[in-house]
Length: 243
Length: 222
Image (tube, rainbow over all chains, first blue to last red; front, side, top):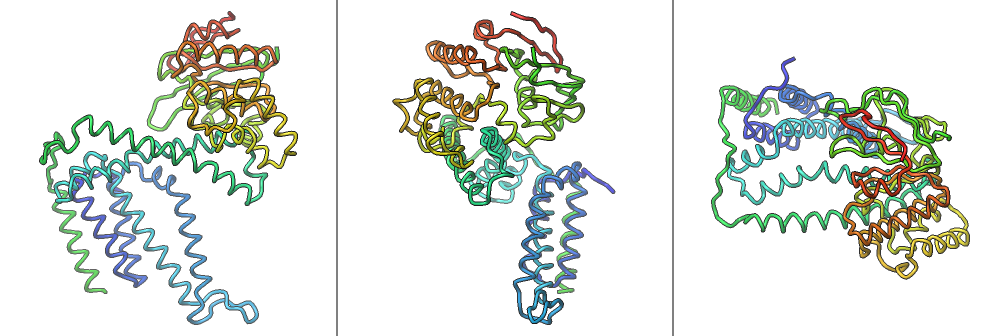
């Protein structure tokens, strides 16, 4: 399998947008499965560290699978597939809705894996070249840039509260929820302080002082970008024909 | 002297980095104050987080009070040792100073009278009584650090790890913190101080360990 293909950020943004839009527009399970397969192949091809990224997504994937199961069980319409006495546990429609949700979330996760293979600076430049206003592109990039910082802080805080001798495995769900509410306060306060400091730092560096900006990041489309975008276009037409 | 934290042939590396520690062997005693010094990026904080079970080694093991930390939850480890972060605001959760000291015991279901008696004693010992109704975020950095130490002591620990305790403190606040540490030492609390403040280390440490590039380059008693 080829991995680590370097694509222009614009190509990644466009392909990710195509896959995500198709995932929302279509509800046919076979078509969604095809989109998932193609989007996952694209994600593998553009990322060198796909196994590491998947391991980071493990928690989210388990959550999505759990929601899909709950959605299947709570949908009553359709032909019963599983019954206990008179109680319908699973119907064909419920199972189909659950699988549909799972496939859609898989496509969205694959699309985000395509995007994370570029640096946030490249992504901003890609968005600007696609005529997205700089302020919005910058906001997206700040969100992405600060995510690891907030994650590290959150981990330190959960460690700190447990290191006070509070064993999460030994307290009940009610007390565990109360412990998490204690975590909310410093997380919120620290986020607000960081946002304020960032805005001051940006003003100090004359953010938005001039209407146009120059950038040292220069994006150039390569042959591989034209090939991938052409394939994406053909793929959209094929899906439109199948749908 | 009894070893309290033992690193047995520990290898540790962060993702995308070279080995920070390779075959690290180190025993830290419970009845003394040990200081870890070294330049920025030498692995001081990593070592302290390994000792406190926040990180786990790729090879070897870390033993605290005779138990492998892999076999212990952080909650259990927190009954043996306390940890004071460099960024102390990451460990202050309460709505008031008093709440900060008492909320964990309330969650654990410990008798209220016992909890508040202990909290009041610590408020007095750490000169926080007048601040008991203040929100922790409104305290000075020195007060926050004293509060974090007092909060750690609420769970009857006998060992404290302090990561860069003098950072962001002016000389007066460092002096006040020093008095706090002196009284902890007098009460038999062992300490591991991570610091590159040589004067502070010289004042408090019984043993000074210098690490560089993931290895111990100096280990002497003071």
